[in-house]
Image 1 (tube, one colour):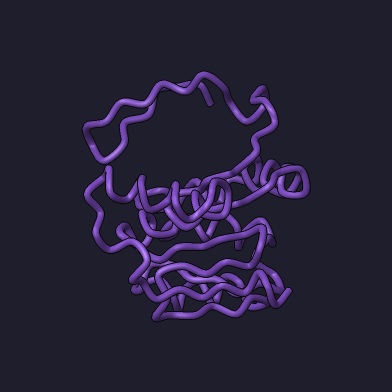
Image 2 (cartoon, rainbow, N blue to C red):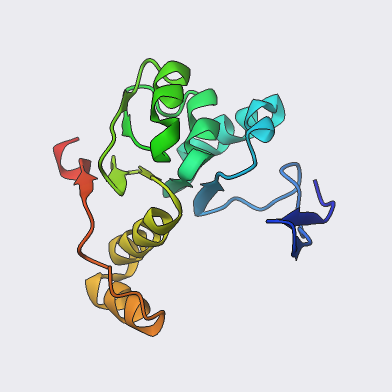
Length: 160
């Protein structure tokens, strides 16, 4: 909806669009955290199903993978999520291969990242796919994020 959202108890987000009137995105980013209930929303699942073929990339962080799973987008894919949610995601997405021990997994179009810091690394990886390794490294340096490029990752895009 366009209703204001309070994230993490203190960040106010005022959406300009709802899923009913938003322009076509190039990238869909789905974040986890306290959004478990929203992943059950059939309107969101339907929107994700309709948009998936039209976007360049779909990126989830943490338990955001459950939105993709419940929309059927992880079927036949390899994915990851927050370490304590791996087993639950395996139950939710039995047609997917859910792996642990990786910061993020790239299936080509769909990239899933584990927890919070993994989300940063996965986002930098996505920047590298879109704008090149040099841009991702300069972004990491600007953020003073020294971990970039040292993470455990699973890149399947070339295999698919």
